[in-house]
Amino acid sequence: MSGVYAPGDRLPSSRALADQLGVSRTTVTAAYDQLISEGYIQVRQGTRPTVTSSGRPADTREAPQGRESAPQVSEYASRVMALPKNISAEQEALQYDFRYGDIASSDFPKVAWRRALNSAVLAHKERLGYEHPAGNLALRHALQGYLWRARGIECDVSQMIIVSGSQQALDLCARVLVDPGGLVVLEEPCYAMARNVMLATGAKSIPVYCDRDGMDTTQLPDPKGVALAFVTPSHQFPLGGVLPSHRRQALIEWANAGNTYIIEDDYDGEYRYDVRPIPPLSITGQGRVIYVGTVSKTLSPTLRLGYMVLPSKLVDPFVRCKQITDRHSSSFEQEALTAMIESGAYESHVRKMRRLNAERRAVFLKAMADAFGGEVDIVGTSAGLHVVVWFNRMAASDEESFAARARKDGVGIYPISRLFEAPTDQRAGFIFGYASIAVALIAKGIDNLARVYRSKLWSA
Image (cartoon, rainbow, N blue to C red; front, side, top):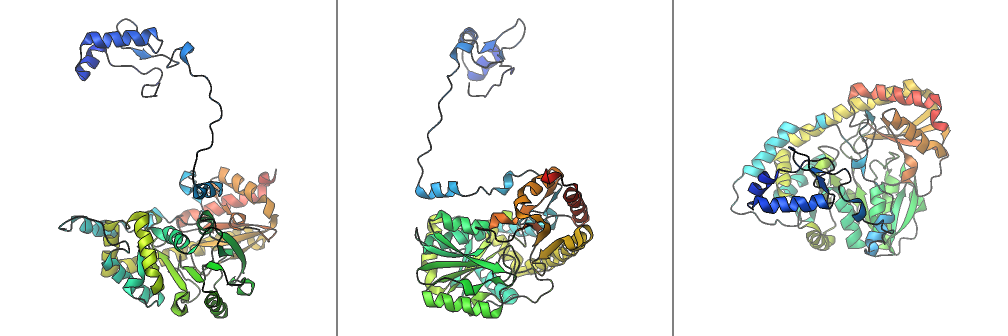
């Protein structure tokens, strides 16, 4: 009845089961006889007992149960369950998947990472114990130097916390700084997992619309009473705008006026193609900026390694809440990343990834131009690992049906309306990530998409 043996499965012979259990064969035979009489198994001469097709006698089957009552969960869990489900691992494999956030498995530095991880595992340690919740000190020192070289950020090691990816960083910000009912400013459109983590705490979101230059700071609300503002100033997600200097200054002045903190998610700061690297907000943040970085776009999102640079007065509450959350991030992976940064292997890999993804980007843009020409507008092309494509002749209401039809042809595309609280553009738009697709497959995937587009089958 528990399903250990399915209908048609054979049971051990009475002699074999008696030997296995160390009991008399008579005991096993008596048990089998009982199962036969109740209709669970059947026996034919010269064969082992077999589970019946029903697996249970007809007259003892359980009566259908009524609808189960909802589980008793906290208000937090109830808010989470009410949010749109966003579990990418459940999606089926597609030949041409332009999903943002994935990177190609072939790009991962397997040899260098294995060498660094093996060294960490095999290193002699007097004891194994819990580490400091802020993270491995050697890794924080290594990242301190890397952030200065790569992003111009000057900070003290004590301001850094190692986290399990940027998502934990956002969760900590919500736990430490936002009360239920508190106000949080979010970009519109916004990274869905950032919006969700804030709404899960019971926060009330205030969307501020973004244009080609990122967040329109002229639309910021009165800062008094606002706990947080979440921004992606170096490459707005998903539209790709870069926040100009006058808006950056306006945002910092706004935060100072309301004693408000800014989360700067620098999720793909390593990838710049047609523009110079944009200095992070935290360089001139006047103690109002929480900088969040990750290795998810350079190494792999599966590693769950990220980091935060905090204003000094926030360090203690964040460290103590981090300890309550998970004690600390995985030690061996922290040590392996330390070794890669210290040896120069990490930055060498970042440069290689930048070249590979610049090539993918160029192939993607050419394929889109060849297939669609002036029928589409593409934005956010100067940086990052994704672009947004607006289809000028397709209505926003057709996004989901077009994406569903494309999936049937093996092409994964993702409607941008899912990232808006209230979409304003009447055109259909889609986010295209290109970092996980082999260069040779990009054009083929776009050709397949163009055939679906011109077939009009999706609009039936």
